[in-house]
Amino acid sequence: MVKRLPFDDALRSSVGVPKRSRLLDSSPRSRVWRVRLADRSLVIVKQITDGGDTGADADTRFAREVAGLRLAGRATGPAVAPAVIATDAPARVMVLDHLHDLGRTDDWMPGYAASLARLHALTGPGDAGALPAWSGPTAADVDSFLALARALDVPVPPRAVEELTALLDRLDPAPHHALLHGDPCPGNDLRTAEGVRFVDFERASLGNGLVELAYFRIGFPTCWCAMSVTAAPLAEVEDVYRTTWRGLTGREVPGDLADACAGWLIQGDALVERAHRGTVDQLARVPAEDFAWGRVSARERLVHRLGVVAGMTRDHDRLHAVGRLSSALAVRLLERWPKLRPLPTHEARPWF
Image (cartoon, rainbow, N blue to C red; front, top):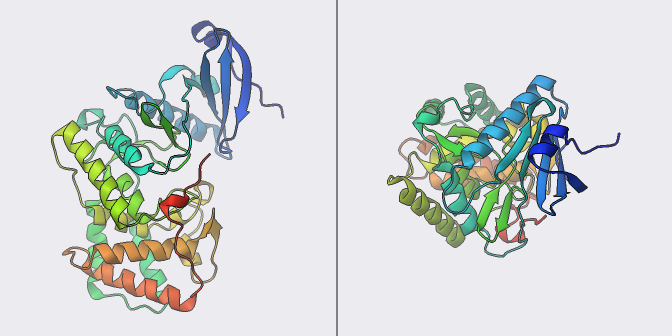
């Protein structure tokens, strides 16, 4: 099927006449074109497609992305996302600023962390309802995580169940209203002359910014290119994030980063790409098979996350038993499958 540029008369009238267009790589859930207009300016045209969803789901993703981008457009000083120039809601089309990506840079994380904090600080309680609340782990995830331990013959400390139940309460997004990107992965962060800008807001939500700051520690859990960040760079980027947030809001970042990391650990859906989430219990698959996503496997992702949570919770009053369970699970996985590799380091991030 020919993927024609969806540019109707209303867009031509408000944006300009397209002269040339190039279809870019994108997910099956969207089509993206780089378009040169008659006045020689460049824009990006993005159309949300069904991608296996129902039309209603695609409409929801379109509305969610446009809402997220418009909230991100509040940024003063350097932008943190492309501006929305025009939309065609019936066709699920948005016309966006074209961003010139400077490409590869070795020291990419501080700018990413600063822009992430600036994005998160743009919204507050008055924006409740503008986007869905962040969707975190559930009681079913707790049950699945504990069942994994039993399947691998790892004893569950008595307090672990109580700690995980309390964790769900602490991760409730209701008290928090940070503007979350939803998938702040390599490829969705473009380095421009003015700083990092994020694209692809289809999963934007409101919640606690720590769940995305946790990406550096927990291995970029929604990304095909999972990777680890070592001690000195990790301390630097977390300090950049917290300092930026404090400067914008006058407050410390709320919440506990260990909670955010433990929340990612127990979510089996964070082991697979978006198309497979919500289909089966992914943690239940781990003892029987090691399934790949991108350049690493599910067991390799899981071992990394277990090690992170174990390290963060050794002296943690509210997650001590969860930390001991995580440590024991990591040991058991490596005993059974000693060829599991550590995640690639942040120096090996892919560039697009």
